Structure formats: structure tokens, C-alpha cells
Length: 312
Image (cartoon, rainbow, N blue to C red; front, side):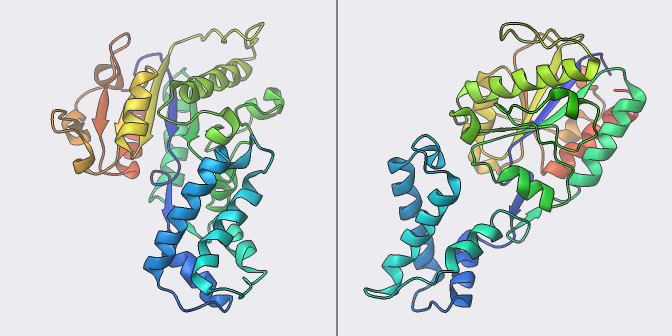
């Protein structure tokens, strides 16, 4: 393949990992374990949506700006989901919120998309063996700060590097991680499709890549100068937030959502149609951003691994 460095970033929920069961089903099951009854899963679903929407308007960005913090924010959502369902005068169990918080901060509530761990490691190994370019793998997600812990509990080697963190780059630059950086709206203050969340991830990747090369990451806040330009590739399952957001920030994108979410006038090429092309042919340097279609995150990672294996 060409000498461009690869900045490969993923959406989190729905792309790298998925709920083991629908959220409302898990909320209902935990509530039953805590002794609550008298309501259906459908009622929990509706009440949760109302509570989430109300809290998002009252305390945006999971309560960070108001000093509330994500844990208290989610506790309020949980309580406001079940209070209307249990009837007046009945107290909510003290262990309800802690149980749900633990479930959805760990692999207890989620499952990793098939093949992610082995394929990420294989792709990075192929890159190190076949090319002199760098690869940085990150997560860009509209989420609070639970994501690194969830990915770690699902078996991935997760770097502590987050956008806006004060961690020393030298401490992480020589380590081998599956996920090299996290860019969460909770830290950045902007959500996809706003290009500023993509720009923040690229800035952090520039600094990490410079530290890995042993060079200065730039002065006075200027972006680090890359030895080779980035091939920026974002993978997500929501067309508006992920595909259009990535394009607006100058990134190429891979859409792993359903066909009905793609506007009718856009005909995305699938990976089987690109098997005889190199990465540089699929994503030409200097050309407008390209969007391709993959059936799953696994299919995309298998394709990338093959590209590196054959030097494409």
C-alpha cells in the first residue's frame, strides 16, 4: 500500500459493541430482580425515552457542564424511568440504580461485535510487518466516559489516552493497544455530526503519532506535522451522524448500518466490489471523501487485514 498513515476510528455503540438484549428488556429484568413489578417492557421503553430526553435537555452532555457528572445523571434517568411505573408512595429499591449502572458500564450489558479483537490485532501486526507507515486506532462516539471501561471489560487492550487528558504521551507511545485513543463527546463538548469532534480526534492522533516517532508534537497548539499524511477512515452505523459527519470533516467513511437509512440517490459500493483495488485506489489521496458499505464491522476489518497482508 501507499505510505500514508492510517487513522482508523470507530463509533462505539452499535459498531464496536451491542447490547446483549434490548435496553428496555435489561432494565425490566434488573427491576424484577430488585422486587419491582406491575409494568411491561414496553412501558419501561417509553418511560426511559421520556426520562432520557428530559434529562438531556435539563443537563446536556450527561451533566458534565452543570457539574452533575455522568454517574449522577444516569442515576436520575433510572429513577425517573421507574417512578412513574411503580405508583405513588412506593420507594425505589436502593440497589436498582447501582445494578443498572454496573451492568451498562461493563460487558455484563454488552457484547463485542464478532471478530473485533482478533482482527484489530491482526491488522496492526500486518501493518507493522508490511509497511513503514503508522496506524492509530481510535473511538469517536457521542457518549459519556463509560466507553473505555466497557471496551476493556470486553477484552480489548485499551489505552488511557482520551481527548483532553493530561496523561503523558511518552507513557503510551511505546505500548501496544487495540484502541489507541478515545474521543467522546463528554470530553470534547461537541457531538457528531459536528466536525469538531472529528478534528479533536485527529489532533490527538497527530500528537500520539509524533510521540511514537520520537518527534515533537508541535508548538503553541499547532497540529503535529506528519511524516506521511493520514488516510482518515471512520466506521459507523448511523448515516447522518457518522457518514455525513465524517465527510464534513474530510474523512472517508465506512457505513455498516441498514440499507433503508441510506438516501435513495446514493449508491454505496460494497467491499466485494473493491477486492481487486488497493487502499490508495479506493481512497485516493487528495480526492473528496469516499463512503463505502460493509455488512458488518467484521467484514471491514477482514478487508483491511487483507489489504495490509498483500501490501495493498
